[in-house]
Amino acid sequence: MIRLRRRPLFAALISAAIPDAVQAQVVEHRFGALFPFSGPQALQGDESFRGLELAAEERNAAGGILARPIRLLKADAVDATQAIVEMRRLLGPERATAVFGTHASALSVAASQIAELQGVPYIEMGATADAITERGFRTLFRTSPRIADFAAATLEAVNDVLARALAVEPQAMRVGILAEDQADAQALATAQDAALRAAGVVPAERLPYPARTLDFVPLLQRLRAANTDILLHCGQPGDIAPLFRAMQDATWRPRMLIGTGGGYTSAETARMIGAGFEGVLTLEFSPFAVKESFAPSIPMFVEAYKGRYGSEPRSALSLANYAAALIAFEAFHRAGSLDKDRIRAAMLAAEIAEGASPAGWGLKFDERGQNTRARPFLMQWQAGALRTITPEPAATASLRTPLGG
Image (cartoon, rainbow, N blue to C red):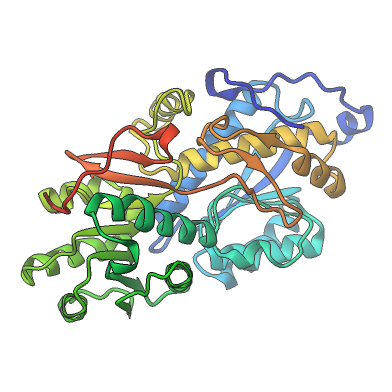
């Protein structure tokens, strides 16, 4: 059983016996790092890689894995076809013995299938599609939450947090779902719709919209006509400013908005929109603004990030990927080799209590390779800063209403 100890940046003590055969054959551990480094998700891909890179540098400073250093092999993929091409390069000429990635579900589905066919460990640290871990793969492990987890968190936010704050019975609330016509966003919208209906909250509207939509006014008119109280929005970062401009032009806004997607945790987005962004809620990966007692290593991670890259972290993706990579590196080390069956056994034996990983998550993989202790956090923009609302042990603020107030 792996238990990460709380110490500065969770540097591991290298104490396991190292087989002579491993020392003789391995000069370095070559791990693929597959992310969208170009295209519309380039910032998210690069931020994800930075977390992996910090973890690799920390592990190398502590002695590496089985006394050999980690070398990361960057691979850029903007779609599934490119992901397959890059995986073949990583596992062929580059001789990668494990792959980390990928942030985007379409990339992960394609790339992890290649890894499974070749018996290479694949660590997914950010893609959310449920299907990724529902294919019975034995070399695949996902440390981050699934779409099903985001849907469950949405229901909790609506039924428990917002219903109480707005003094409305959950079944009486008018919930609208607005999602970009893109695979991950539509999968989340479908899961949110199903979770709400199962609890007796029938969405008033569910509206898709095409990518790069600039005119949200017709959609808002439909939401207003449906007397929408709470709007759930999932789209690209570039969609958020046009949506809020449209709300201003339409002189209408819901009583509360829950946004999902990297743009909703971005300080740049908050600055761009200004006062109208006050009160916006978001469900996202591990936030930086949590109680220190909940995840005490986060300030040290932020300092390490600033020292390495010269700026504050651009999103929580770096923190989530950093924590995931540390867990995987420790499991690889304890496995005693990079044999896929030994790594699977070591990953399945890993167990971390909630709050004990740098990301504030716990860890326990099920037989499908899904971390059952990963969950989204509910956060709110208050006075220009993102505050954690739930779970309660991590909370740094109480919910404020109304939106834009």
